[in-house]
Length: 157
Image 1 (tube, rainbow, N blue to C red):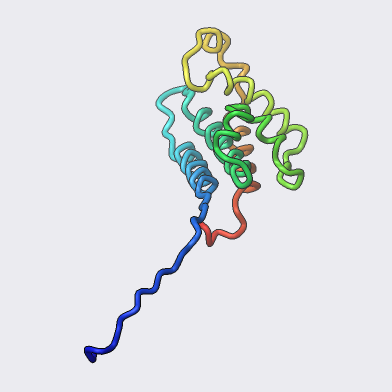
Image 2: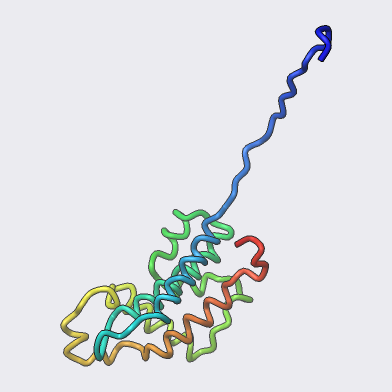
């Protein structure tokens, strides 16, 4: 480079960007919880674990939808662990459950909110867990919600 040439510094000013990765992370975790349900080996006649895995999968899938247009604090404050409220807060085109499935979600929500799928409660055991949904029905509901809330353009994941 000749000695009389001058180097010029160029400075580009950029604006900060906001990248919302929460929906993608929540959808990924929702799929992983459901995969754990599918891979679960029942250690005996009954376990709370499959119920919890399905419900957590539903919760995260629904929250991923809400996180598309709201921040985490808002979603947590508005929906908490209320699966039914979270589902009913979806846009109409994402509310695809039939009345039987919605009833199942309502009954499941009542148990999930009380942590019935996380902790041993004598009253549930004493009644043979008769208030619990059939795990196969809950799994089918989970699968439907996962499909409904999945991003159609998977290029972002």
